[in-house]
Image (tube, rainbow, N blue to C red; front, side, top):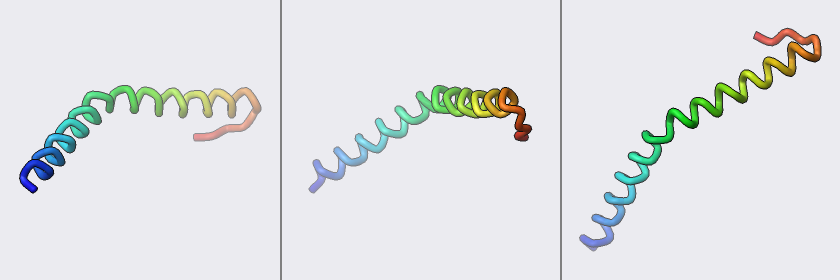
Length: 49
């Protein structure tokens, strides 16, 4: 029981560290997606704010 709990805590800690380490990448991808949608809207003559 203790070993299962410690494994779960370790896993959660690693998952949190992984998420924090990659949050910049996630934000960058999201920004590129937004920029791409805006560029496509401008190119097609539609204004999206």
